[in-house]
Length: 278
Image 1 (cartoon, rainbow, N blue to C red):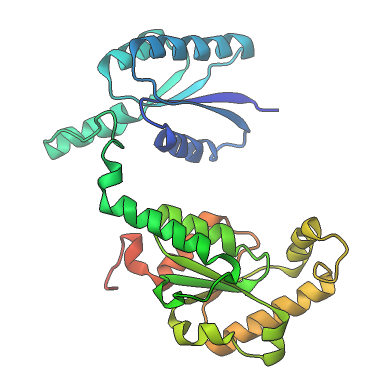
Image 2: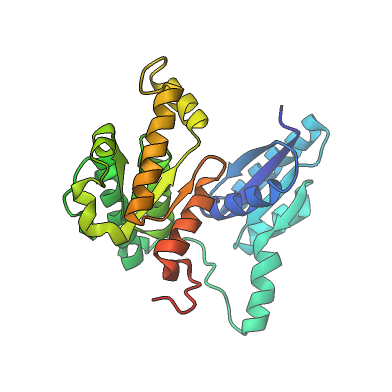
């Protein structure tokens, strides 16, 4: 049962506010219910949002927590005047002091996405997502050399979600390639991966965890058996070690942590902290 309701209100999608609010709430040992109210861009919608927030507070007997990224001054005024939640205005808290310090107005106009389809960065990201979907799970070896990163590892070690996260968050073209029993018998990297060894990054996983993940897909199969999982993980790690491929274990790490490590190793300049890297 959730112990607190958190509202995220925005005159855009609310995704920024939700990401930020969620990150803050994870610092506390509670399970909040997060309700996003996007596109609050008129006085009427502001009053509706206030009614919803205040009603929740009355029903639950606890102040809702409200993260907002609102630009329209009329909307902000209504929320400030009538909302009975704990209000965390992210623009007021961060953007205002930055405007003062930088001596300039921020770009936080409503409709920040209106011209996004013309943006090169956006088109690159779309292309990266398409590339990554096409190269999921070794579906095609075509244009592997066009990848920014190629993830390798046994089946169900976390390659697909990590690939998509890297594509969507960082606009990277990511291929992922499963290591299969034939590769282990040959004791060599799949031939398609040899020419792009520098772009490889390995994912591995605790065999017990792997077995339980695989059992959800194919219960009581040889594929999911603990013995087979131990064998595959052992062989995959040995192969990556021999090939000089960096790798990490995904067992206890979030996709964000895995992705950050991959960026540091393979493309440090993409983290925006490329000290001395190019």
